[in-house]
Length: 195
Image (cartoon, rainbow, N blue to C red; front, side, top):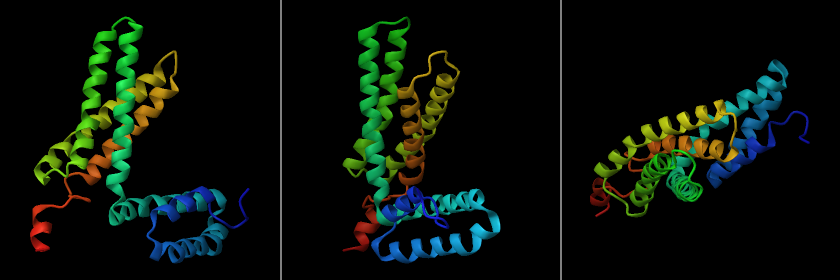
Protein backbone atom coordinates (compact mmCIF):
# COMPACT_ATOMS: atom_id res chain seq x y z
CA UNK A 1 0.00 0.00 0.00
CA UNK A 2 1.39 3.38 -0.91
CA UNK A 3 1.64 6.42 1.30
CA UNK A 4 -0.97 9.15 0.86
CA UNK A 5 0.39 11.97 -1.28
CA UNK A 6 3.03 9.84 -2.98
CA UNK A 7 3.25 8.85 -6.65
CA UNK A 8 3.01 5.19 -7.73
CA UNK A 9 5.91 3.37 -6.07
CA UNK A 10 6.67 1.19 -9.10
CA UNK A 11 7.00 4.27 -11.33
CA UNK A 12 9.39 5.85 -8.82
CA UNK A 13 11.39 2.61 -8.72
CA UNK A 14 11.66 2.58 -12.54
CA UNK A 15 12.86 6.17 -12.49
CA UNK A 16 15.40 5.43 -9.73
CA UNK A 17 16.84 2.54 -11.75
CA UNK A 18 17.12 4.59 -14.93
CA UNK A 19 18.49 7.83 -13.51
CA UNK A 20 22.23 8.35 -13.09
CA UNK A 21 23.37 8.25 -9.47
CA UNK A 22 24.07 12.01 -9.49
CA UNK A 23 20.49 12.93 -10.42
CA UNK A 24 18.61 10.11 -8.69
CA UNK A 25 17.90 11.76 -5.34
CA UNK A 26 17.27 15.31 -6.51
CA UNK A 27 15.10 14.53 -9.53
CA UNK A 28 12.93 11.91 -7.84
CA UNK A 29 12.59 14.22 -4.83
CA UNK A 30 11.58 17.17 -7.02
CA UNK A 31 9.02 15.10 -8.90
CA UNK A 32 7.64 13.67 -5.66
CA UNK A 33 7.37 17.15 -4.14
CA UNK A 34 5.64 18.56 -7.23
CA UNK A 35 3.27 15.58 -7.22
CA UNK A 36 2.32 15.94 -3.55
CA UNK A 37 2.19 19.73 -3.24
CA UNK A 38 0.92 20.96 -6.61
CA UNK A 39 -0.48 18.30 -8.90
CA UNK A 40 -2.34 15.99 -6.48
CA UNK A 41 -4.34 18.73 -4.69
CA UNK A 42 -5.25 20.42 -7.98
CA UNK A 43 -6.00 17.37 -10.13
CA UNK A 44 -6.81 14.41 -7.92
CA UNK A 45 -4.98 11.10 -7.61
CA UNK A 46 -5.84 9.63 -11.02
CA UNK A 47 -4.75 12.65 -13.05
CA UNK A 48 -1.74 13.19 -10.81
CA UNK A 49 -0.69 9.56 -11.36
CA UNK A 50 -1.12 9.92 -15.12
CA UNK A 51 0.95 13.10 -15.14
CA UNK A 52 3.67 11.43 -13.08
CA UNK A 53 3.71 8.43 -15.44
CA UNK A 54 3.95 10.77 -18.42
CA UNK A 55 6.94 12.50 -16.79
CA UNK A 56 8.64 9.15 -16.17
CA UNK A 57 7.93 8.06 -19.76
CA UNK A 58 9.43 11.32 -21.02
CA UNK A 59 12.56 11.02 -18.88
CA UNK A 60 13.16 7.29 -19.38
CA UNK A 61 14.41 7.34 -23.00
CA UNK A 62 16.76 10.25 -22.29
CA UNK A 63 18.15 8.47 -19.23
CA UNK A 64 18.61 5.24 -21.14
CA UNK A 65 20.41 6.93 -24.03
CA UNK A 66 22.51 9.16 -21.76
CA UNK A 67 23.68 6.24 -19.65
CA UNK A 68 24.28 3.88 -22.58
CA UNK A 69 21.69 1.44 -21.24
CA UNK A 70 19.84 1.41 -24.57
CA UNK A 71 22.25 -1.15 -26.03
CA UNK A 72 21.84 -3.46 -23.02
CA UNK A 73 18.04 -3.28 -23.08
CA UNK A 74 17.96 -3.78 -26.85
CA UNK A 75 20.35 -6.72 -26.54
CA UNK A 76 18.17 -8.38 -23.88
CA UNK A 77 15.00 -7.84 -25.93
CA UNK A 78 16.72 -9.23 -29.03
CA UNK A 79 18.03 -12.32 -27.24
CA UNK A 80 14.53 -12.91 -25.82
CA UNK A 81 13.03 -12.55 -29.32
CA UNK A 82 15.55 -14.96 -30.86
CA UNK A 83 14.88 -17.49 -28.10
CA UNK A 84 11.10 -17.20 -28.55
CA UNK A 85 11.44 -17.49 -32.33
CA UNK A 86 13.55 -20.63 -32.01
CA UNK A 87 11.02 -22.11 -29.59
CA UNK A 88 8.11 -21.30 -31.94
CA UNK A 89 9.90 -22.86 -34.93
CA UNK A 90 10.68 -25.98 -32.89
CA UNK A 91 7.09 -26.30 -31.67
CA UNK A 92 5.68 -25.83 -35.18
CA UNK A 93 7.96 -28.55 -36.52
CA UNK A 94 7.13 -30.92 -33.66
CA UNK A 95 3.35 -30.42 -33.59
CA UNK A 96 2.70 -30.41 -37.37
CA UNK A 97 -0.57 -28.46 -37.19
CA UNK A 98 -2.16 -27.47 -40.50
CA UNK A 99 0.04 -24.86 -42.20
CA UNK A 100 2.96 -25.55 -39.86
CA UNK A 101 5.63 -25.24 -42.56
CA UNK A 102 4.58 -21.72 -43.54
CA UNK A 103 4.34 -20.62 -39.90
CA UNK A 104 7.72 -22.17 -39.08
CA UNK A 105 9.29 -20.37 -42.05
CA UNK A 106 7.71 -17.07 -40.98
CA UNK A 107 8.91 -17.56 -37.38
CA UNK A 108 12.41 -18.26 -38.68
CA UNK A 109 12.38 -15.11 -40.82
CA UNK A 110 11.09 -13.06 -37.88
CA UNK A 111 13.93 -14.47 -35.74
CA UNK A 112 16.50 -13.23 -38.26
CA UNK A 113 15.76 -9.59 -37.41
CA UNK A 114 16.58 -9.88 -33.67
CA UNK A 115 19.51 -12.13 -34.55
CA UNK A 116 20.89 -9.43 -36.87
CA UNK A 117 20.38 -6.90 -34.08
CA UNK A 118 22.30 -9.05 -31.59
CA UNK A 119 25.16 -9.39 -34.06
CA UNK A 120 25.13 -5.65 -34.82
CA UNK A 121 25.40 -4.84 -31.12
CA UNK A 122 27.98 -7.46 -30.21
CA UNK A 123 30.21 -6.83 -33.23
CA UNK A 124 29.98 -3.02 -32.99
CA UNK A 125 29.10 -2.72 -36.66
CA UNK A 126 29.75 0.44 -38.63
CA UNK A 127 27.10 3.16 -38.74
CA UNK A 128 25.99 2.25 -42.29
CA UNK A 129 25.12 -1.28 -41.17
CA UNK A 130 23.39 0.10 -38.09
CA UNK A 131 21.13 2.18 -40.33
CA UNK A 132 20.20 -0.98 -42.22
CA UNK A 133 19.32 -2.68 -38.93
CA UNK A 134 17.35 0.40 -37.92
CA UNK A 135 15.15 -0.02 -40.98
CA UNK A 136 14.31 -3.52 -39.76
CA UNK A 137 12.64 -1.97 -36.70
CA UNK A 138 9.63 -0.91 -38.77
CA UNK A 139 8.75 -4.38 -40.09
CA UNK A 140 9.34 -5.78 -36.61
CA UNK A 141 6.79 -3.36 -35.14
CA UNK A 142 4.36 -4.21 -37.98
CA UNK A 143 4.78 -7.95 -37.33
CA UNK A 144 4.30 -7.43 -33.60
CA UNK A 145 1.11 -5.43 -34.12
CA UNK A 146 -0.20 -8.02 -36.60
CA UNK A 147 0.50 -10.84 -34.10
CA UNK A 148 -1.10 -8.86 -31.26
CA UNK A 149 -4.29 -8.14 -33.23
CA UNK A 150 -4.51 -11.66 -34.60
CA UNK A 151 -4.06 -13.11 -31.12
CA UNK A 152 -6.69 -10.75 -29.68
CA UNK A 153 -9.22 -11.84 -32.32
CA UNK A 154 -8.39 -15.53 -31.97
CA UNK A 155 -10.79 -17.94 -30.31
CA UNK A 156 -7.84 -19.32 -28.29
CA UNK A 157 -6.00 -16.35 -26.77
CA UNK A 158 -2.35 -17.22 -26.07
CA UNK A 159 -0.44 -15.33 -23.38
CA UNK A 160 2.91 -16.33 -24.86
CA UNK A 161 2.04 -14.72 -28.20
CA UNK A 162 0.93 -11.60 -26.35
CA UNK A 163 4.26 -11.36 -24.49
CA UNK A 164 6.28 -12.03 -27.63
CA UNK A 165 4.35 -9.42 -29.63
CA UNK A 166 4.89 -6.80 -26.91
CA UNK A 167 8.61 -7.58 -26.74
CA UNK A 168 8.92 -7.48 -30.55
CA UNK A 169 7.18 -4.08 -30.65
CA UNK A 170 9.45 -2.79 -27.88
CA UNK A 171 12.49 -4.15 -29.67
CA UNK A 172 11.43 -2.47 -32.91
CA UNK A 173 10.93 0.83 -31.10
CA UNK A 174 14.35 0.50 -29.45
CA UNK A 175 15.91 -0.29 -32.81
CA UNK A 176 14.42 2.86 -34.27
CA UNK A 177 15.63 4.89 -31.30
CA UNK A 178 19.09 3.41 -30.81
CA UNK A 179 20.53 1.93 -33.96
CA UNK A 180 21.66 4.32 -36.63
CA UNK A 181 22.53 6.92 -34.02
CA UNK A 182 25.67 5.19 -32.84
CA UNK A 183 24.35 4.79 -29.30
CA UNK A 184 27.02 2.93 -27.40
CA UNK A 185 28.91 2.08 -30.58
CA UNK A 186 32.23 3.76 -31.37
CA UNK A 187 31.90 5.43 -34.77
CA UNK A 188 34.84 6.48 -36.91
CA UNK A 189 34.38 10.18 -36.11
CA UNK A 190 34.35 9.49 -32.36
CA UNK A 191 37.36 7.21 -32.62
CA UNK A 192 39.28 9.74 -34.73
CA UNK A 193 38.37 12.53 -32.31
CA UNK A 194 39.84 10.57 -29.40
CA UNK A 195 43.23 10.17 -31.09
